[in-house]
Image (cartoon, rainbow, N blue to C red; front, side, top):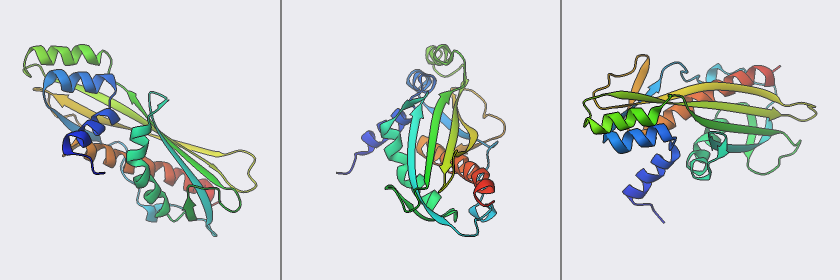
Length: 206
């Protein structure tokens, strides 16, 4: 069954439903979304490739402040899987156990960064957008790879952020404006995962 446009939009609002963003958007009316430029995308061609790629079982989970977010996980699952498949680091990427037992776990955790964001959103709402504010959501991507014969997993991580401005707030420095929250989230995800995979590739290919 296809989701209606309002339902789909609601899904993405739930995806980035950290209290700071929800309060600001609800009280301030409309917002603009910016992807931080501090974590640019690393092209798969730059990864260090293993001499002989092996299959891997991929497990992905999106979290909100450390708690599992099933809806967001489902929304990004296919994108993450495709990115890992096209990385060139593995012979095959599957949801089920693979020959050799190699496993790759990717966790993307959404953590609010802005202090007292609800109060800022409330002020913006009362002044009908004349008082501009900015809130930021942080993201931490952690990848754990356990290959055949390894006693301990290889662990790599990267950080990213999405900034939301409401009212008369100026555009944040060192950030790129996105057309929508969905576009911002998908771009951030692609960039942070590429950075983490690049770091992981330096160890896998040894």
